[in-house]
Image (cartoon, rainbow, N blue to C red; front, side, top):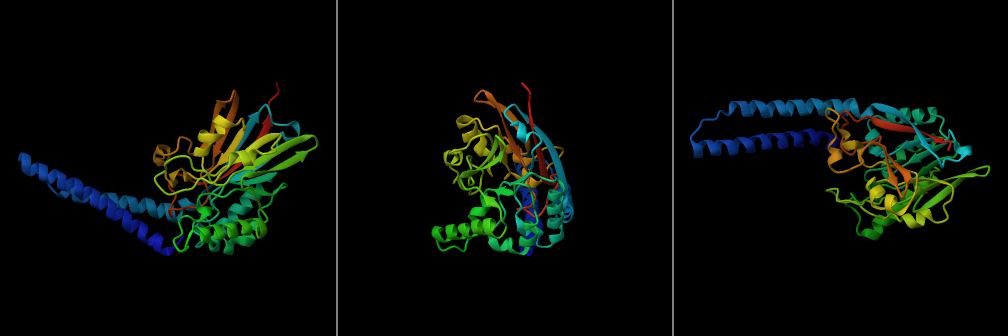
Length: 337
């Protein structure tokens, strides 16, 4: 997290709040002149000051404490198609590391890795956004990330930030894509992760198979900011057999393609961060994403299909208020007919 961004955020927020209140004051003052009633400036002034102070208190809490609060959420996922050999199989799902978040507190990332390992996962699934701007964010944390262990390894996909679309120093798109491939090679080589780019991996136990599919970031809605759609679900499904789990960074992909085109029982996503703020149980992310946090299940193609949206670990804005970092522990359970 850059120091410049951290310092500018409260200043910009204060300016927005001050301008908004004074704009309302200006409209009220004009109306008072037109309709001959009096209005005092003092309540508006103190309202503006109060809003700025309260927002700064929330930001300070979110920056110094909230962005490093960690929840380990446990989910039993029951489905009739879970093979007997995978009954009790433990998937640890993490997302949105945005590693620059930990530049000022690397011990916090070490604690997260230790917490992941403490769940004794059979498989770790990472659903994208390793970095925010570029590979250089990851370099200081390579040794830590390599310590993240599971019996069947780490499987990962690329998120919108991993396509480096928010970086401005590329001379053209070809240069950007070369940098994306460099990041992908880093994840495969330096970290030893199995990076799924519109393909799949089979995990075999005796006669039973668990197939993990993964697609590149595939955003399927207007989200108010630039993103990309590089996922090819048909390629990821090619040759897939057994019980299927799909990794796709953006949860909008689920309703747009996964539900109407497949019978995949379980999809794992991230991306939303649940807006990194929740007020009395309400998140602004709910205005943009129908599925923005936790588990969702519908009857699709005459079978139950579920999506889990992990709210992430790192930050794109340097604070979390009411939305803690998340490690999700999903245990697969069969259902007797």
